Length: 98
Length: 222
Image (cartoon, each protein chain N blue to C red):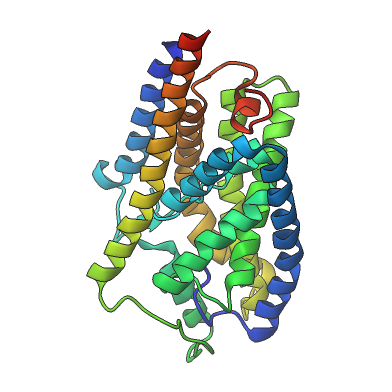
């Protein structure tokens, strides 16, 4: 029981950490991806740099890209949810068999 | 922490491939042995991979006004040891390079080194040391996952600084510059990753706070 309570507190803290930059006054920005900022910093220090290799395939639009990112998260979260449910029901099953 | 396709000089790209390859091979051997010795660990291994899959897809806002994503490699590193995460992390990075144009094939060696090798090894080492110093399982896992996440981004900063030293301030100046972009942004996110790792580990094991929690997950005890 204690552990379940603790999980909820930890989830609440996680949400607070992620939401804080969006809602707290004084924080904020354009929330660009750090990976893109890294690329920008390279280009700033080496003007005219041309990447010597291009991705084999690019999502044709931001919508398709967000679809694929959502799919990645959904597949992972779906499997995790299945595993958590399985583990809990099998533990209950063990108790019943003994 | 993704270095984008084509943004590492060819010599650096090849060098990071050479450094990472042995870890991935060793991880594959270790993975095979774990699955043969304890087939019941297969599902938890897949769950550790799934956790990395989810977390590395979540781009979260940070106090620096930019967005970044956690890595999720700490969970598997703590439960199965850091070696196997080299394989699971490589799979995730390949997925993102091929389907999302995020990261890249030429930069795969460097990205594998930061996310799938340094991160998991730091997570595992911190978890071990924290446990030896008397931290509870939850605290040790939190510290391991959070610092592993942070170390991945610190590694990316060093990798980019090696490839692109600052014309004026040199390598160290470049480490600070890229560190400002990657590592500072990552501090709150790595704390979030540490907390989430504890929650998911507890939920997966159903044995929060019990001494055998990790060994139940790894399939060493039933």
